[in-house]
Image (cartoon, rainbow, N blue to C red):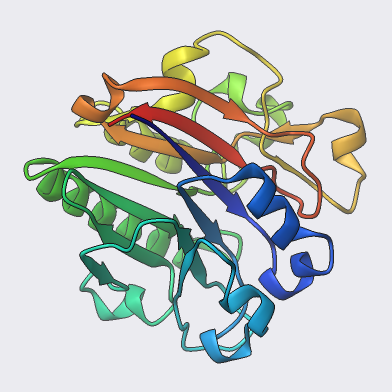
Length: 256
């Protein structure tokens, strides 16, 4: 059976509700969708989004209101749910949900942005380290399907202006080196597995400069699969025509 998994940084779940998110979700009908940057505590999410027919909804609770946050809608109830990486400095920001199913694990993760200076970049790199260690552990047990806003473009092909951004967070050598590690130590970039040399394939565009209209973007949202899950990959795609956020949804179809 082929299952459809989606991921989307919605840049505010309550905001995107007003742009037709609920109807889009029902129509698109993914088996699981991981959301990032929900910017809401569970109790702040409107009833119409708490209870979507055919879906179970799970939402993290960041320490700060209106900041960070992730969520998942899934058709099949998981056996277990975890909201923690197990490291307090990360878990208080509500960036992570892990679902356990009989055959696989599913993770949605909103990785830190390094835009607040060197200290925040270091925090981001520590988060990458913790995430990779957990993925290695989980992939020994079951298939692993992880998705999220990684907040880094991996290669020059993954952003419109690589040379101009070499000294900017999101394309720093230290950040890109961690993605090198992800994809050499057991994880697979699902999109690049099937679209190796396709350029101008982006998932985020700057609102302020109307960059989406010109497709001046970055590919910073990823599905990352363990090697066994990657062998079952049927399709990987970017839904660039779906509006409502400064990010586009991304998806994979996997035979399970």
